[in-house]
Amino acid sequence: MPALVTAVFGLVVVGYVTASHRLDRWNVTAPIVFTAVGTVIGIWFWDGTDTAIVHGIAEIALALILFHDAAQVRPRQIQSDAGACARLLLIGLPLTIVLGVVIAQLLMPGVGIWMALLLAAALAPTDAGLGAPTVLNPVVPVRIRRILNVESGLNDGLATPIVLFAIAAAANSEGSSVGVGSAVGAALIELAGGLVVGILLGAGCGRLLAYADRRARLATELLTVATLAIPVAAYYGSVAWHANGFVAAFIAGTAFAAAFTRPTARQPVVAADAAEEPLQLAAWVSTALGYAVWALFGVIGVAQLFLMLSWPGVIFAVLSLTVLRMLPVAIALVGSRFAFRTVLFVGWFGPRGLASVIFGLIAVEELEITDETRMIIGAITVTVLLSVVLHGVSAAPGADRYGRWVRAAQPAEELKSSAAPSGGRAAPPARRPR
Image (cartoon, rainbow, N blue to C red; front, top):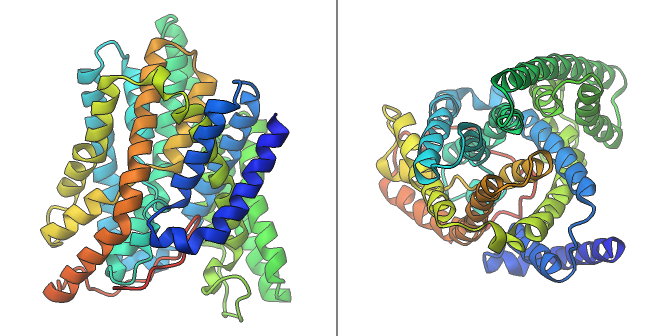
């Protein structure tokens, strides 16, 4: 049965790509398509086996996504937007997590503090891929699109250590306090190890490839393959060293972006921006793995939702997509001189996507399945499912409406110059302005 399901998945990928232009017109995104397909498979064919395969796909997908998202944020390109990005990442993200923990404890009194932290941190990262019609829509000011793209590229990496810390603590929460303390201490050591591995491999490989490129003009195809190998080496090298592979992959992406430079732009083969060329293969592989993760989300999450659904989880999901996102964004952007309409736009277009799904898949694999676990996983599933639908169908119309307001109002702060964001992973062709 797994072989047949895999074959069907491959055919669905071909079918989606074939019909993607028409589906884009109907605001039907890839996450909607593959979640629906996965749900059908989960209801009719899935027997609950091969969870190790699911865990493996989730792990390598998250490692590649963390590396790619971090590496595509080039420091020189975001200098003019650094203040706004820092506000969202250093003020908005922690506020979202703290408020999420408080609301989770109020709505789910039986849920422990570590599980509440897991829920809040897993749903804090945003996914620009779900809002690609917003991030790529030229009617939205370049600066606003860049801010949303940078926030999405970095907040999953910042949330990852917190999620893994919460999982480690929750896994030992039923033991003695010494057991929890030991698990937390071990998690901190693993995080530090991942940081070291990420810096060494990311910066070292980046400088080595830059040197070779200057000396011998590396073929673009080979350069992209070498770049793809960096997060693989960082993740599995950290695992072999008993360090945190996800942190290593994220830090490796950041270090690679700082270390790899190209003195002159050649005629690009696979990207419009020479700085993005090395990341293209990583982006494409991340896209393919992303389709698989969305299908697994349908198989394991949506198809089994009736076993995990609870009213507190549904209420938390609604609050997560509204108050728990929009209020911290509003607080973070106080004094930024953005118009109120822009604050609302940025607050709403913070979809929950691949990172949240993968965190949920990892939690299912690592934690004992109890009523508490089911409630948390159910809340994550409902939140992402609502986001897939609501943000998927509202991204293009919302961007067009916001673009019309920008043309009429000509807000000075929003129209400041900025580097245009790249499409990144899972990004459809940009829609033409209406």
